[in-house]
Image (cartoon, rainbow, N blue to C red; front, side, top):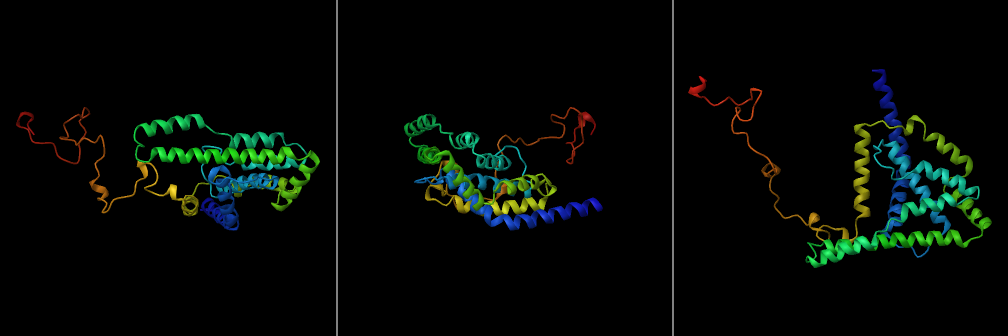
Amino acid sequence: MEATSTTQKLINQKLAAFERLQSEFEVSFRFIQQVHGQKRFSSFPVDHAVRYLHALWVCECKDRLLSIYKNIKRYEGKYCLELLGVWQEGDNTDVVAFLQRKLDMLPFADLTRQYHEALQRGGEFGLARRLAHGRLIMLNRGMNLMHALDAIFALPEDQLVKEVHVACERYGHQPSQIQRQLTEMESPLYAYVPHQVLANRNMVVMNKLGVDVMNKPTDQPGQRSWRVLEPTEPLSPFAEHIIAGYQELGSPLHNNIRGDRFIDRPERSDAQGL
């Protein structure tokens, strides 16, 4: 009973902490999607680069507070805090490497090959259109990376550090704050404690954000590939759907080496004396 009470108290603390973070998380999540190709920025000043690292940290905090299972490192928020600390000391080597690793994933040749193959097959229910759209997203992503690097490389080192300090102060990542934030991320509040209430809260938030982010005409049903076509009405009942590969069991004596008894009675057979 005591363990259950302690866990419930921690869950309530996690929910309360996320409530305070939610509005900033939603803004940060949208900004990350824009940087990753949803928007092509005409310029990407140093302030935006700091904001990008800040946004990744905020999203990492959300995942930890709501105990999202970590099968991949998608945000690397703790590392972003460390990068901001090192950058304020005057070294931007790791920052540049991180930006390149996050944003320079541009298989243009492969996408173009798939696009032309889809065109030759008649478009394949919108697949060619989606590949062209995806290639444009990747191009936006690459352009944002180039703008970010251009802003960093254009400034003298002393001026660059000054701008980083100003941006870090704006987003709450001065050196003393970073140390406190790193310590907090190791506290029980940010520990992985899977719970139904936390999972439900995450689904509600992400469903709403998903609708907000995927609201462009090219993302709507009927404008994507054949896997996301507009539904036809009326839909048939779920129970009438045929499961591929299903075989009805004709008799409890069929393919029943161990002779297990099933709910349905074996058919009577005079030869077996049943």
